[in-house]
Amino acid sequence: MECVAYSEKMNYLKNNKGFTLTELLIIIAIMVALLSLAGYAYNAYMVRYNIEKEIKEIYADLMTARMRALQQNQQYLIQFGTSSYTTYIDNDEDGQLDNPGDTLVGDLSKSGLSYNLAWNFGSIITFDSKGLSNVNGSVWISLPNNKPNDSEYDCINISRTRIKMGKRNGANCINR
Image 1 (cartoon, helix red, strand yellow):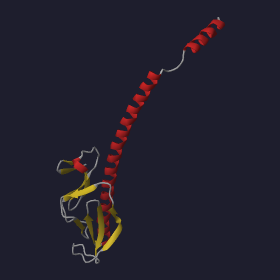
Image 2 (tube, rainbow, N blue to C red):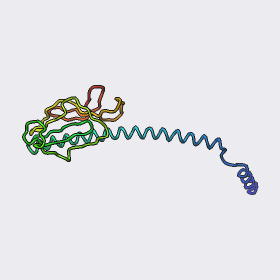
Image 3 (cartoon, rainbow, N blue to C red):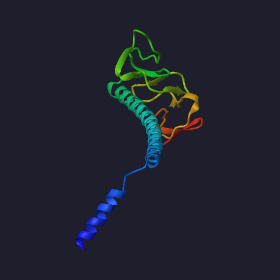
């Protein structure tokens, strides 16, 4: 009985020649399609991740400038550019950026951001010695061609007493 089972197994192995070329090509086509979908999903994830990362960095720097202004009893100025922002100590406390009169704060300044910034106030925020802002407005990531993004945060609302991250909804930044 054992000999018959072994014989049947050998016949099966002799007749089984593996995959045909058509089957192999179908498997490869399915794998290419799945990999391209995974690549697209990964790219979308990286865009979302980078937007949130930059907004959180800007938020942290704004909060740090505000706290330093309060702790050191000095005015801090943050000047926004399209792909950068620069922080200064306002030595003469006039609310104006004076070169060379104001001191650059390098650890709260960033240049070469991955995405462009936009805002709906003058390009400078002042935090006075009480930690209060001189603006009520928003800063947001501006994607090319107004491409939609599904990031959790893509803007920052700045009011006299608060700084909050949010999600842009058309023309408004909604706090989260």
